[in-house]
Image (cartoon, rainbow, N blue to C red; front, side):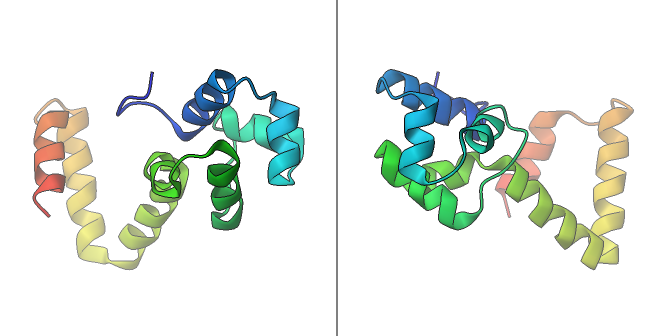
Length: 116
């Protein structure tokens, strides 16, 4: 799979499976519970930075790749950013309203974000 729409959990599960490593074995290597790893793989929970680094090492993948896919952390950071800046909050709400009302498309939003 390994595409732009892939989640962190999907990527971890794909790499783990491709390497022939069981969920329990990867959890043991990362010193986390199998239930926590399962929650990460199904995108119900997000790993902390130290756990993300351990998972990257255990899977032999760049930590930067896992960070790119860790959408839940990005969403939390964006939320803090928007909540802390009234003007940005208003602009974002307007943009989302335009999107929901069909006045703008995801391509336009991507363009605006990539030009920053």
